[in-house]
Length: 337
Image (cartoon, rainbow, N blue to C red; front, side, top):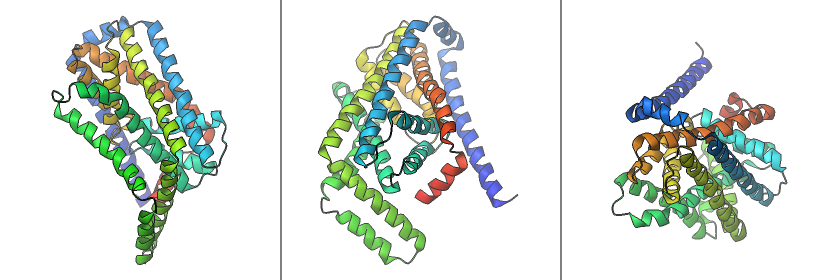
């Protein structure tokens, strides 16, 4: 067996094992809730409210695309709304299907195809992820403040980690207006004769310079924060309408906090789409606020299923129309690394 075939086998093995782990977690949660109770709740779920939740979630995509459009215009490229929708939802689809956030790598590749340099593309995608975490924190902190002392350690730790994730890159930029960090990367690249290290250093420096420009663009920053909050409001309302669909509406503040924590939890690039992780975290928050576990896990599964199915239904055709395959993404990821 050639080295290429061995690597491909290892990749597929990892993907299959990761997916099976996610499914196993999901089945374990349903088993703990009770299969009979779970399916009874599913059968009694209102189809009208499920359709409403799909419409609400679809609205979030209008703002997701609009946010990306703001960044691509700032980068000097005017890309059509539908084209941006295709490349963005394709990236989300690949994040559901593949581990290690390869969908984000694909989105950078798509932007490069649209004549946006790799450094700018990387800075844009990185900032989108920072904005998502920031919006989730802004929305969840008021709720969290009421029960900080009684909250489980894992919740407090998760939120503190999120604060550091946001604070570190932004603080580096704010305290480095003269771009000394960029000079440091240049010196490091020139100090070593290793060609690979030089390439990595140059790419990191290029991405940092563009990220520096993005963060210091105050208008873009504040507008994108507002849009990001709007995106997640629709995401939270999707979960809330699902709880109405199962005839057990949770408090909107509980849905808010649950969706925030669940999305942070599933952002760890281990299991494709965060399957099992998202549902467990969301159900855990609902139970913490008094929702019976069987109802909580049903809401969590339906909520995540609606969002993933919507993404896949539109994302798979979009990925096919773009004409990118998995080997292209792997090659491009090696270039970024």
